[in-house]
Image (cartoon, rainbow, N blue to C red; front, side):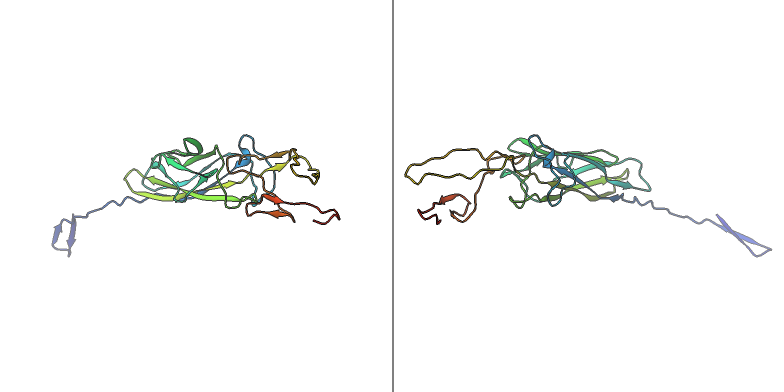
Length: 231
């Protein structure tokens, strides 16, 4: 109620104010988790590669959440949109839309991501992910969606980036030259003393290159020396 007066008389009226509450959506800060195949069983940790910053298969961190009108949150994860494979087998996801997301290849768990209502997350690698190049230690990057919903129902989304560092094979010993007798049926056996590392699936193989005849897959067709020593 307000009153207006001119000093000798006054009048009063009622003013109605309507306040509409607006539920502000949470403000989120993205984060990135970096894990390495070199932390898997049978892997070969080293400091080489593009890039190589960790030898751990698990990483934890925090998605920042700020909201002026919410004190508790519902936080869920969404499966990556990019196609991933493990030793050539497609990675499929279960748990999208929940706080636990699991990627598996033919029922074998490859990667697990969990997050709680405060935005604290953990990403754990349990199996290898195929990378772009089979000849170098590189990285594979993809995003997991994060949705945060406040008390009033307003929601925001961001991305939990995941970077997976590659593992690579290692020749444990220096190989000696192999000389075959120039005769039909000659066979030589030996051991390359090779450790394949984490990427030990059906796609792992040894290929050879050189000045001899090698097919498109890198396998030797024939290589011999003549009596004069020429190739």
